[in-house]
Picture: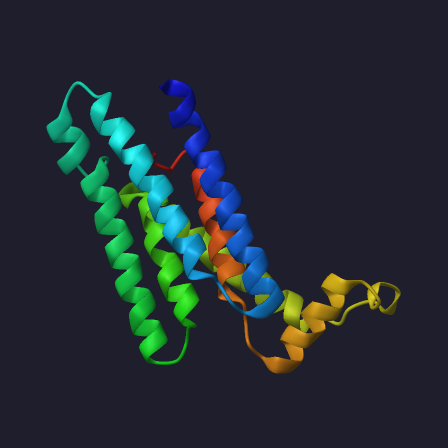
Length: 173
C-alpha cells in the first residue's frame, strides 16, 4: 500500500505537466485532466484514511483531508472570481481545485510565493528580446505568439508553483 501512496504524487505531477503543456500550446486545459487529478487525489485520500490510526485527525485537521479540501475550495473560489472578471481562463480557474488538494492548507503560502516568482519570471521572459539564433525553435516561436497576443498561459506558472511546492514536501496524497 505504501508504494501506491508514493506513486500518487508522481502520477499527479505527470498530469500537472500535461495540463501546463496543453495550456502553453493552445491556451486550453482539458476538463478531463482536472477530473483525473481530482480522482488521483481522492484515491490517495482514501488510502490515507484507510491506513491511519487516527481517522479523525486524518479527516478533519488542517494537515488532513479537510485542510486539503479547504485549500482546494479556496483556490477554486479565487479562480472563479478571477475568471468572472476576465482575468483568468476557465481552465485556469478549474485547475486551482486540484492544485489546492495537492498542496494542502499548509502548502498555500509556499505555493503563493512560488506563484509570485513564476509570474515575475514569466513577465521578464515576455519582455526580454529573444536572440535571433533561437528564433526558429518551436518553443521560442510559441513564446513570440504569446508575447504578441498578450494572453498569458497562467496554467504553466500555476503548475510550476505546484510542482515546486510538492517537491519541497508540502503535498498530500
